[in-house]
Image (tube, rainbow, N blue to C red; front, side, top):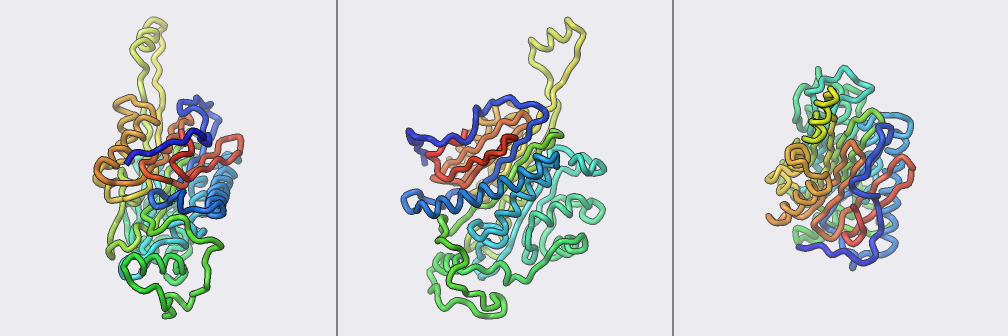
Amino acid sequence: MATTVSSEKIPLLQSPQRKTKASDYVLVIHGGAGTMSRAKSTPEQQAAYKAALAQALQSGYQVLSEGGDAMDAVVAAVTVMEDNPLFNSAKGAVFNVDGKIELETSLMLSKPPASHPEIPATRRGLGLTLLTRAKNPSHLVRALYLSPSLAPHTFLSGAAAENIGQSLGGTLVDPSYFYTEHRWREHRRGLGLPEEPLPTDHESSGKTSPSDIPIPPLDQLPTGTVGAVALDIHGCIAALTSTGGRTNKLVGRIGDTPHMGSGFWAEEWKSKSGSLRRFWNKVTGRHTTRTRAVGVSGTGDGDYFIRKATAATIGHRVRYLGESLDKAASIAVQDLLQDGGLGGVIALDNKGNVAMPLNCEGMYRGVIRSDGIPKTAIFNDEEVA
């Protein structure tokens, strides 16, 4: 499927190769991809999603502008989307084939956060899956990442992860909290079953209000996620992803969101100078290396992200092939499409370069820099690079 770019693009970013100072900070977010259509949308729907994206950007920006960690900025941004039933995460999560909610999340950093230097550099990140009671999975994964003595692993699931999180102050809720009428109707419609009567048993606690959101959702039967990647003033990049998975997934299905290297990635490395620079350094007696870092969060059909190791592939193309972030991300997203996988990614490096390629009609996305101006887009005919 080829994407079409209109003659009137809405610029989200400056040049994808924009150079930034060490004091600059950037936040980029996504809210899902692949299941929205401009032709079937209304101006009211588009405005509601863009307003929600802007709110998430501003929440994360507040952390970064005060010198906070990238880790806390991505949690702040994702929390806004987890609490908004427009998005397929936490409160707006989709149902599996049994009409249950199973949530996933992940966090990865290019290096330990400045506020927690005791975290081992080898810790890297953590993925959580099959969550059923975590009100904000993003809070849970942050708490467990910062507690290596309690959660020494890279991948945890279910009640064990939630109970550790609760011991660290996390909030658990009854599964009925996640029930929304519009997701329930999608679940039933997707299975070819009658949408009514709506459930009134103990699991939904009778929460069958006529409308969970002020407008009909723009995406139908979503497969996407929400995510954020941030660069802070300390040069750390953090990537956080959170999702309800794909609509009517099999019970116990695990997607790319908690799979390190598939739906999320962050890394830092030392990069030697080019041949001319090395020659000059030899002449002048200087020996310098540069620190490079990237972070990635994906959204779309997660099974393909797993098969292609999409997030890590982007980082490795930048690191080992010397490709620009924009080129590496675009190639990886087109590779997904060749196998039939729809979706997109957000990617950020420590120079402040941002890439947001997609291979489908739309991806909720946005970016905010140190000027504090949130820029958002939905469809593929809005410029994202």
